[in-house]
Length: 434
Ligand code: 4AD
Ligand code: MG
Image (tube, rainbow, N blue to C red; front, side):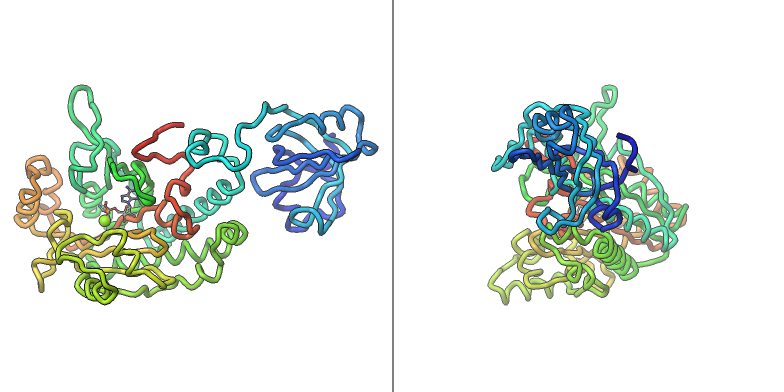
């Protein structure tokens, strides 16, 4: 071996090496021997391909190895690429040499296994075609988000992960023992963004956030990736346009670069290409009317739950934006609506298929006394936020921003039933291993 040149399965499936002698490295996905022929389906990071190893075309040792090797053995195959309609993907390799790099033990993942078992062996399940397809979409979505903000003049800056105080309410704070003192894992870059935005004006960040969410739902993780942006001198409208822009750019790039992956997951490229701005907008009050017409009564002031978000997006192929939420139950930093002081200039972008809130954002309150009052109303001690309040003491200007759950976005793009599959090793209330 070593005479053919090394190729990937993805390239073969695109028809780039037909008729050529190549060498391929990978893992056995499926294998069976019929008479004098071993049909070994091999996977690499780019796809799966069948290699046919005939007893009379290879050395006796090579044939024996092909017969003996179990699923997930690491192999090198050498041979000629031929187009064959009967083979999965339309191509196969007619092997003239075959080598096993590592004989795998009996692989624990066979057919029809429970979700719980697959989570126990997540470190092996990440090799599946379903998971690797999602990971490739995730790669593309992350790339698109960075591209969008950089193209629009935002600086990438990083907040700390260990923090002295939260910004999204005490109930979901993860406590850390910081050498005997109490610290918390970050829920959002919120407080740091509002300090940095007065330095850098247009900023973004993509990194982990932590929420001690005890609720077991199909859309909550305890550790998730958060894409956040903050911009000075603008209000809510400008950042809503960025939310629409970044979501549609991610959808467009996936529709262009990840067609096979999303089709296998049940989304079409046409669906994603149609996700263009503007998205439908309605105020919270209008949303309550829409819900009422569907027979769902929501008491004014209550947050919208999964049920309501599902009803609002029913039959819609683009996300829906709800603005002007009641101030009660909203974070202290959100700006009052000057026309209706009981509302905030805040918004959520809501995705369909039960994914719900993908983005949450707002214009920020600029008045020092109003924020202090809001902190007190929420049972917080303004002293713990004193450094943050300096952003309202030294050159306070109008600013706005949002946070987008990357796994929520990926869950929606890939039409996943559960958010845990949007990330390789999910962290949920019941599990932090493997
Ligand atoms: O709505 P949230 O809590 O807003 C903030 O944290 C703001 N400080 C963001 C900002 O303005 N910079 O969270 C923002 C987004 C949500 O819309 C949701 O997509 C995601 O983060 N998110 C979660 N994703 C997965 N699991 C969880 N437990 C999540 N909690 C929030
Ligand atoms: Mg929110």
